[in-house]
Length: 403
Image 1: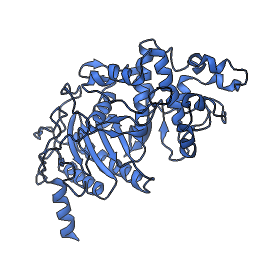
Image 2 (image 1 turned 60 degrees about the vertical axis):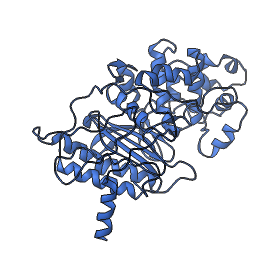
Image 3 (image 1 turned 120 degrees about the vertical axis):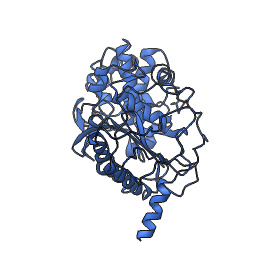
Image 4 (image 1 turned 90 degrees about the vertical axis):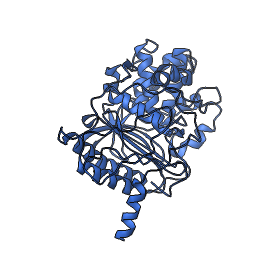
């Protein structure tokens, strides 16, 4: 057993060929330098924890990639099963956090008055009907963002019927009121799709065009078109495609208070407000703000974007840590997969990041891989001494049996 574990660890940490871009087009331009401080310091404890994190990751057959950075420097990156740094993946409901950022930008630009604006302003024809439940007039943009609209959910068992309807916006608005607006959390992708419709009407641009102009392009990449509803509105809160490196930039931008490369993408005040918990899930206990989840991770506050099947962008501000996970999302839910990812973050990545920050200042940092147009780094750092700061064992798609 000891021999097998050692062999597995050597496989995990072995240098591999650089990943090829077999999917989405690689980013057109290298990103500007991160606005955070110097590279993480050296720690033998963190080296062990990173290796253990990879061991735990290798036990998850549905996990396809893990990418971790601290202070803007990549400290671990690994892919398998055809995934790659510049290959786009369906981030599923993690795109709800993207919608939140776009709403924040639209408010800052004056297209939307604020989170207290009633959604009836954007659907006048619907609300002009005499048979509309008057309680729906109290629903605001903020209620949609925080999943507190009070409308029956279009997700879970209702999802198939909703996306099979001829008018997704109308079907979402037609959901019965089962809670007072502003009450308990009712997770519903219909709510974020209404936000996409509002964004389209408020800005005069499609959600896709607005996302590229205001969010993606300022960070050096483009988002490819994704699914639209029968009326042509881009799906709000599902089926958006991003590469792991783009997900990392997104998380880094939020870690840096809405700024990227010296440019303020979204107001810092929106970042702070959107990650502040306003309610909590009755299923997992995680907090939920304006399109962002939150939790305690190893005694430290963390917020995260979360998509079906195990698509995550975790941000731990106190440790200047960003962690991206991508997973196989086709098929039914895999029992134990999501809790296992959270344990990797809580028990290995967070303590490891804390160890790096606590390491002696005299330790010499090693240059870690940074996002670039050429793809991911191919060389793995040695773990034989305490001078290791990065594990960037990135595999050519299909070249490794596991993470």
